[in-house]
Length: 329
Image (cartoon, rainbow, N blue to C red; front, top):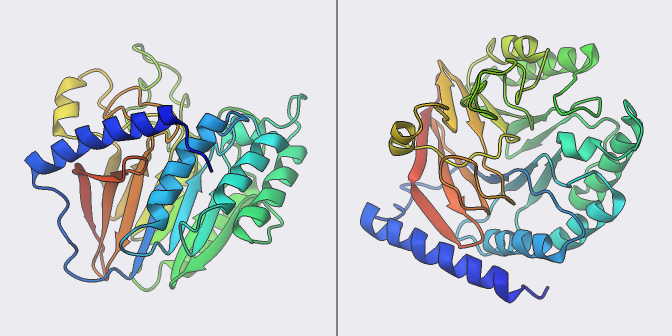
């Protein structure tokens, strides 16, 4: 794929800035041991038919393909397309097919991916298209947009909204399935990774994350069923919820001091439950670190999970955005 000169320039500038941070902060420290599982997670790619957006994604896929430690998986955590149209999915599939970023690819649905139909409350076309392109991109046969898969002995539970609004709707069947999948997985001390494009209500700076004023508590989060989902997730140990949707960057102690209104945090922990909100890959962040092409690499060990921020277009680690999350036994 021909990468535009403009995108090369942007990647170069981001790389220079990030490498400078690496130098002064001591750089990325090598791992002490090989992780049991390594995967990258990005969100809000928002592919249209604009080749510049595909080029930006291509920069990241090339970086993942060249990783010093082969990725076991790559997660697309929703809003993979900008409007759920076939030509947008086509460009996404064509772009991914030109690279070999990971052993497996997991595609999760976001609200923008449900806007396929011009009719209100017409989710079926979006579901059908998502299932079709999930198979084309990942090779995974699905009957629902929500599903479970296992990689290296670790379970990934992918949730999906079942209507076409900005917030989410989960059927009783999906909620019962989520509970059953977690109950079956959370028995051996291993972490379980739940992917939902939407964060829980009231987390990561919500409810003020979209505006300077207090808003409806559901705004920006899952919506009316957030409490029900949260109750299920927190029943079990070592559950990691990975979300996107908010278009925020990474947070640090410094960004928290500079952000007294929103109090945005990209990683929140309560007991052994961890919520990780990913930045938008395609758009610069509205707060926190504000470059695009950012995401996380998760390294899973027997006793912990390390989450490392990375600018995939620049090919640079972000050492101020690293968290070590302990597992309970």
